[in-house]
Length: 254
Image (cartoon, rainbow, N blue to C red; front, top):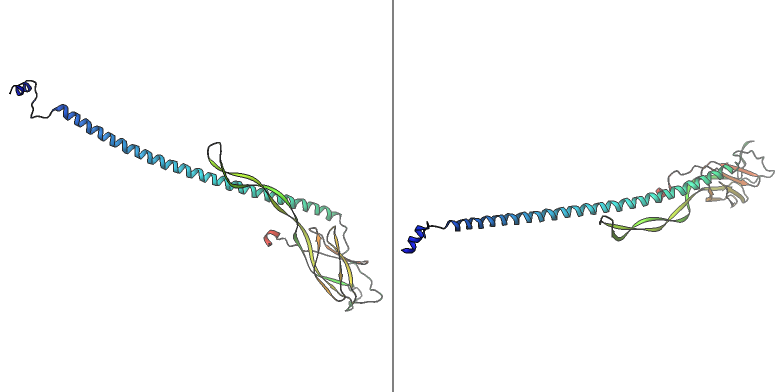
């Protein structure tokens, strides 16, 4: 009774909840909610940070791939320029030779021989008595050789650049570049009963062929320069024939 009276005098009742305890309990609940919200915020931050890191890595990988592709394309452009320069040099040299090559007369009247050996005697006073006939004349581009050039090519190695990005290591490599020239192909038919030796040229170089009596030599060839005519000499007789060149690049025909 004395204790109850004392508590009553102090304003406390043992049957009523202590306000201090309630405040502590509410504070604990508030702390728990804040901790839960903090944990949720931290989890969301880690998720967004991970997604951002993955996005940046993907963009960096895409950039490295694009750099590698551009490097390869640049190497191909350099190789093509090298081949074009080589072809231009050859064409310039061929043009110089062509300017210096004497032109053979195309149609020169040759008096008939005293004794004719034609299989079929040409008819008419001014009939062409050239003892051979050239057929299927065609000019074409051919591979005359090759030389070694260099280019930058990607390897299987990787390194870090100044920004810390991983890039593919490029190394210089050698590769073979074709050298191109021209030739003229043709068939020769002997119109006489005796073998005929002919000298043929379509530029600075010439070749000799022997055509059997009444025979045909097929797929003969001689080196040429673009624009030159095909000249044929038999003793003192000569003829020249226009050449139509295949304008289609050799690479597209292979």
